[in-house]
Length: 151
Image (cartoon, rainbow, N blue to C red; front, side):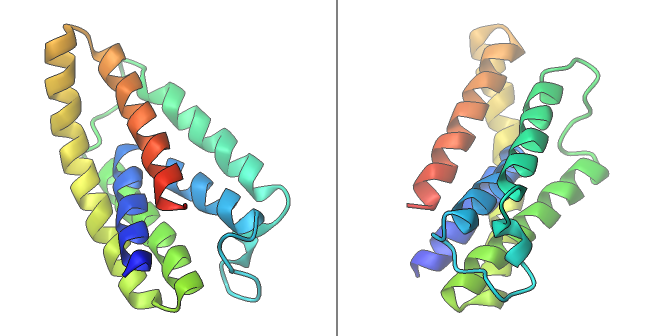
């Protein structure tokens, strides 16, 4: 059950920031918290993969604050979040012996995270009177959830 909860939560994180869940899974695989050696996802645990995924995630976090960044609800962004949720769920599931259920939990989490994140950020931006504090709060929530999911 813990595997499915972790996959769902990391999928949710992918709904907030598509690459944040992947970076978290990569760090966990690199530190041997996730046993992915000998699997098709073993590349997530390679020496430089966590740094690359973290750099990409940081780029996404910065890009998210730009005024011309499209909504997460448009098809390309929505699909990217679902794909990343599936990939992180697959990694969690593969490590825990529940591959298919991990993918499903990751996908469901990413859809919920995408929709809830859009609503929550809009509400927070309205409360703050500005989108930037809402976006930063969303970043902090995503990072905290990723840590909790992998503990």
